[in-house]
Image (cartoon, rainbow, N blue to C red; front, side, top):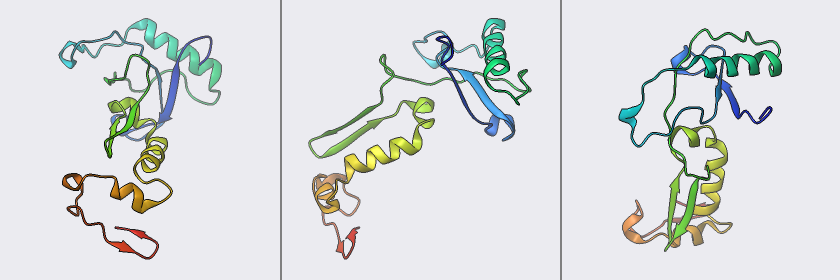
Length: 145
């Protein structure tokens, strides 16, 4: 964050032909009640904020965009992910595209939440109706499958 401007950058994705860098303001758009209100427009002020940020903070990148798009994602009011256990069930809501930016970290957190240090204890805590093996984990040397 530079001067209070929340910006993130990722390698260019499918929508940019896997070229360059995606640089964007975080939560720069207006809140929507549902996706049908998305107009896909980028304002001149939004564009200028990102171009100025790149020019000032990311030397070596061409600041003017060669492609631009909007993205639509959900997040909680506090921007936290919903990760919890309830009655032996792990509940995870990383909030669509917002969570995708944190996929490696979320994977580790969910692994730890699902499979504690003793993997058998983690699997045994899952109610049988939710287990793909229908309630009978197969214990093998070095782990459970």
